[in-house]
Amino acid sequence: MELELKPLNLPSDSERPFVIAGPCSAETEEQVMTTARQLAEKGCHMFRAGIWKPRTKPGGFEGNGEKALPWMRAVKEETGMLTSTEIATPEHVELALKYGIDILWVGARTTANPFAVQAIADSLKGVDIPVLVKNPVNPDLELWIGALERLNAAGVKRLGAIHRGFSSYDNKIYRNLPMWQIPIELRRRIPMLPICNDPSHIGGRRDLIAPLCQQAMDLGMDGLIVESHCNPEQAWSDASQQVTPDILDYILSILVIRAETQTTENISALRKQIDEIDNSIIEVLAKRMRISREIGQYKKEHGMTILQTARYTEILEKRGAQGSLMGIDPECVQKIFEAIHEESVNQQMKVLNSK
Image 1: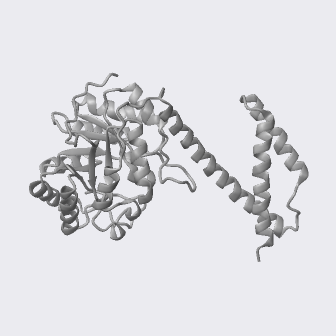
Image 2: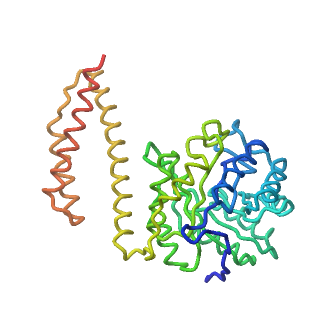
Image 3: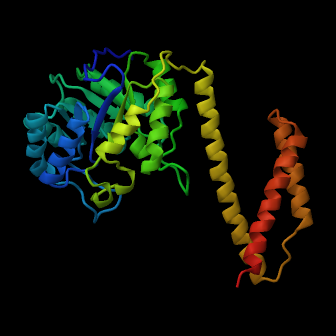
């Protein structure tokens, strides 16, 4: 299905991509207005805040709901900024439109549910409003495109995508893996679709926001949606990934915006894919070392020696053969696994020698 798109017509400065900024959650009227005023002073044109915030587990702050919508209207009236929020149900759509919200976005968990997306699409029939769609939680490009198609079929023409990364199990550098190849493929499949990046949810830490913003610009993304809070350390949700308006302004001021749009043919895009694969290798190695430590604990409890020669020989032979089948020199694979084995032995030594 080919999408019928109209321009988003979102405000931006000539030197910068379009930027939507604001706190993860609309906590209090004072917090919303203070943050909005600070962002407006820095030249921000679009304000975001979560009104409905169902969390992964119950018990946390889940948003103020309709109570917070008049605060968003006050932001628009006082600062002139456009306002935006996440919607997940037709009721959310109805209330957001009632209070004059200018931009809507569909969250990652909602995108993953075609029933929920269809219900939202039906509630937006006849409404001309920009709608941004976050990628689904898991790396499924077809599901992402399917959500865009459902909205477009309902008459929503001012569409855009938000790349917020993809969930994965176990410890990792990023909160959500960027998997840049997926938004790159989305751009190839739907060239006219604006794509903005959400470095806050990808990074999960404020120190990762600046490099992620630059990566997004290097890949030719059209905009950014960044969580910014007047007092991030005291935020009621996702405190670690929010920055002050001052810090956000600095991050934006040092962005390098390149004239040439990056594609999969550009060396920059290929290098980003290598960076991502390297990150994955580090994460997988960390998992392997964790298991090595567990084996070390077992050996300690059962009086076993660390070095099991037969097992080591088996690993080198099997991995070398696998490498050969996949076009990698077996000698290269052997050197890599010799280094991995050496570190595994070191990890187990620490366990055996610990009190």
